[in-house]
Image (cartoon, one colour):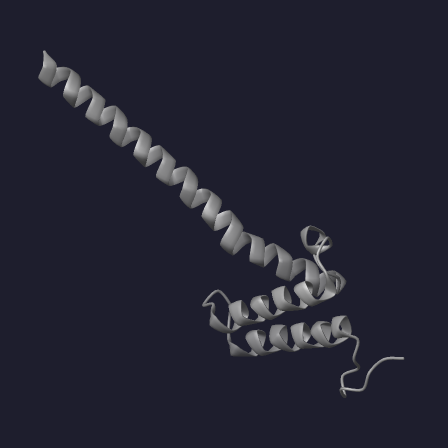
Length: 109
């Protein structure tokens, strides 16, 4: 009888661990991958920081933008190298705009 309870408890514990792992993985994918893709889409379409970034300072937003550029450089989710170069170019233009400079590097008045 004790062996039966032990096995039942073990199965329940393993099921709970499996369910918890699945929830954690889902949260992680949403935060790390899908969040970056949503941010990238918002920036490319509007040229503004994503809504969830708007509380941060300009400096912090530029650091986040640099992180997105690193993500685009490393990810294998981009169709081909021409698309990757185009996205990186768009991000660089947005970065210069956010930093308060023109494309040639002169400060905006």
